[in-house]
Image (cartoon, rainbow, N blue to C red; front, side):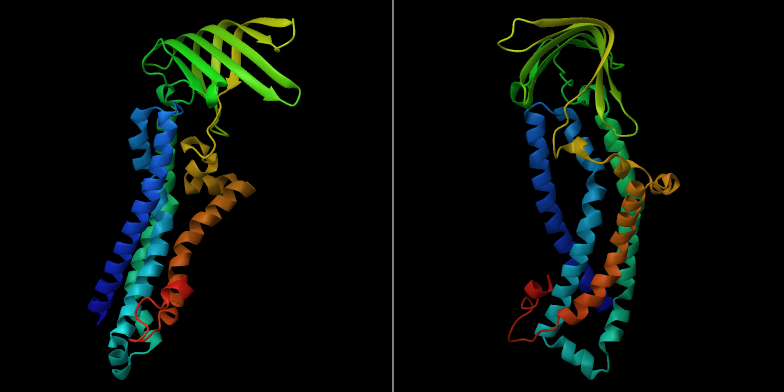
Length: 305
């Protein structure tokens, strides 16, 4: 009985989790592929970054897949009258829970490993990959000598050459800033530049050296010209993109515990809650899956969800 129930529950769990993963992954992949197509992400880093982010998908999919898998598995036992045989053999609902306890433990440990260790590690590696200059938003032009438009043409960049170390030569940035007071046009030309990352926020900044910046308001005869040795500006971040992840989510769990900040402790609480969900949904799934042969195995699936 133990082997039979374990095999049936695991089969349904894996099948449901695979379907959920394909749906979620394909939707996210299309979204990020669009991000790469419009020039907000280097196409070469898209697939590696998605692979690093795989654990983050499964830490949410596995508990839900396990819950639905239990509903389908026990629903089939009720619909095929196999549960009647179990009851006639003296197996109660509590004993059924004990029989599936090994599967519950296995899924709980798996989700704990993913949410506490593998997920943050993958997010950290993906963040490191995105931090490379050739993948940075607005400055990842691989074919040097071409203008690149961002934010619907409000942010235009040109890089003559990008060295392997990340140093960019002859950098041009034209930006159109919109505000309540009107529109301001700016153009910046610098000899060199590089991408700098703020370790506390993971936001990316463009640092330019030895250049000039011009600002003008359409309709005004005034032109502001500034010559600088060093200039630092925030690179626009795509909302909902690969880089929109909260910085704390990329930190290891032990580092979050050491920080003691409310934001980091909230992230730890979220990570711990994911494996705790697994035994809780198991307690709900067994009574909620009760049905009969006339109504079928899927009768309780909708109300249970």
